[in-house]
Image (cartoon, rainbow, N blue to C red; front, side):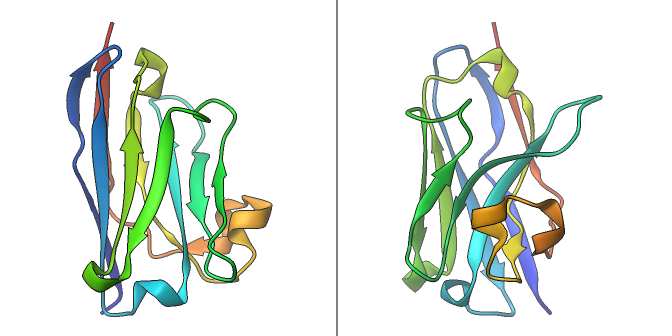
Amino acid sequence: QVQLVESGGGLVQHGGSLRLSCAASGFTLDHYGIGWFRQAPGKEREGVSCISISDGRTFYADSVKGRFTVSRDNGKNTVYLQMNSLKPEDTAVYYCPKDFTGHGCYRGHVDDFASWGQGTQVIVSS
């Protein structure tokens, strides 16, 4: 069964850091690009970051550039999102779906991604 499980969320103060993990099962993660999306209450789901499979390039939303870093550990079949200098506006549920079309990281379209997990909640207090 293909599954992606997010973890590592929690409550952190403004300026703090968290590292989110995205553990894959049922498939080999290094065969796919992996995106990080987030959804805050009352807002649409938005792309935060992505790591492509074709060339290993990483992508970031302007709102998180310089603060977030995406990486992968193929040996552990896990992708990470290191989040530093967190702001209250980063508060959201974070998801890590896989890019099943191969174009997701480049287009940033939600429809290019599949196997959405339950997400992990990040709350940044002011």
